[in-house]
Length: 490
Ligand SMILES: Cc1cc2nc3c(=O)[nH]c(=O)nc-3n(C[C@H](O)[C@H](O)[C@H](O)COP(=O)(O)OP(=O)(O)OC[C@H]3O[C@@H](n4cnc5c(N)ncnc54)[C@H](O)[C@@H]3O)c2cc1C
Image 1 (cartoon, helix red, strand yellow):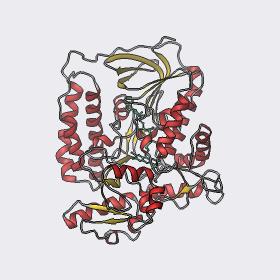
Image 2 (cartoon, protein in one colour):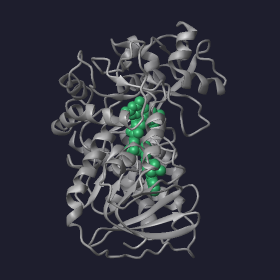
Image 3 (tube, protein in one colour):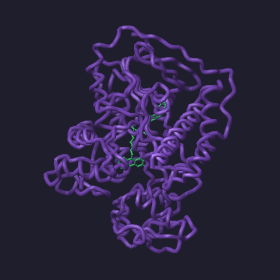
């Protein structure tokens, strides 16, 4: 094989990309790309944990399945939900074998925590930094695999379908390279950075969804966005630090600008209502009071217990000047998770032959209209393994040769103008945030189409700014388009 020929290229080094690499055949030559440093991804930010029925006699997969349907408004795909809950034990067991450590109780059994919407304690966690533990351990394992070449700070700039597979343009340290593969796995994560305020890491600009869309894959459910109600409200940074809902689970109160509890006006479950209900309540309460000042208050609980249960949250807030055992924490909803994405079947295949998608950029249908807390890390594991297993079956029949397409990165062209992404983020924030604004959606859709058309037609220099501007415009187009179609159908 030539140096730039691979059996499989994986775009993404979060839970989905890493676990796909682990499950591909040992003789597959694999290239795994991450846009920035290896540790920068949404996986590393996951606090709460991973849901699953694993060695718990008092729980049942049917209960997990039912909780997933209830959270998803019964709009979930039954086949994939069934796979998700039934195969959870297999994948949770495997990552434990690979070195992932979950918190245990004094008797040696796992400490399973409870989150909104779960009828049983079934969330495996590593303190309040579960995602980082999973990402670190899976990455360390992948780094020992001789068949996987991991390239960090390497941007996937473009990818096209060829007769034999795929050709892709990458950019590392100012140098462009063209690579080719028979199979391609998109594991590029979420879209949070298309909003002004999000819990997502800087890499989450929906690049993989844009590439898949441009290759003809079906994209579904992009308007199914989860807005987390309790992000730390520091309106100076785009990435909002998440205050896990487990803090409300442990008894924290939500307060309005007058320091009053207000959830009783909106839902009988008060602070323990699901995320979308709480986010809606905050926005409605903000309209009622005319203020967007909101707080989470856990100062009435034992300070030592709070520090011990939420060490990462406690320390992060302390760095921001808030001691959560003594101070009210300023919060406000922000973009958190994408339920939809690149449409895949249960084997994680897209409509484009040999193009796979898994993790947050994919739409397996498991979440329905709303994700059940802690089901996404599980989805990333189960369905990236499915992608790897499907590729393993097809690999012996892959062609011997590689058709090689060339790309023009327009190195002499002008860079994409400043301000496009800011404009698009503002458009989404004002038209499609928590409670969609029909008027603004109408008004902004044509602006988004114009921006996207300019990015597609003008030969700008291909670099990170260009790729992310084009992804942001494509995602904004897909969200608003879907919202308009839904509105017409309503
Ligand atoms: C703050 C926070 C808390 C969360 N808590 C939980 C939780 O408790 N439980 C749970 O189940 N889920 C949780 N989630 C959701 C969950 O973390 C994500 O859905 C999941 O980790 C996504 O994994 P992934 O592998 O699909 O994407 P990511 O982990 O985001 O990885 C994406 C990868 O794609 C790469 N990439 C992107 N674009 C390109 C490009 N153009 N070129 C090259 N590489 C590219 C990135 O570099 C990165 O390596 C949380 C999310 C956030 C943000």
